[in-house]
Image 1 (tube, rainbow, N blue to C red):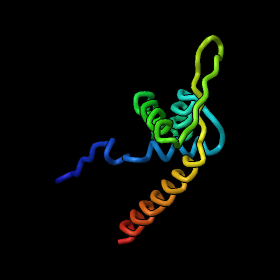
Image 2: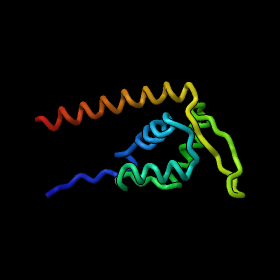
Image 3: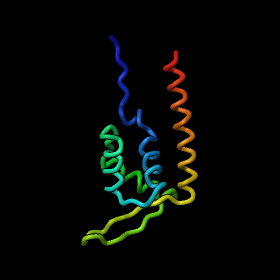
Image 4: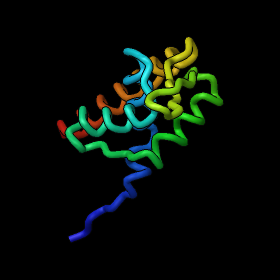
Length: 111
């Protein structure tokens, strides 16, 4: 029997961005808080880890989708992230695309 194996990174392409944008739509969060919340809310189905999330956060700040501020908490420097207005537009675009993908998968399931 033949099984198609797709690399997880390719299968989940764009999903970490969508999840981060959705989390930050509610309120600002710091990096590790985002990592932990994704794992918790997804019941460990999505476990991207810091090595995945931090580069995405940095890229989204550079692209103007996120705003960041630094604060000293318990003697440690934390970076807090929140959506910018262009980040809200990006979230809307990601939501539309995700809905299209879900619709396509449902159509295939009904065959």
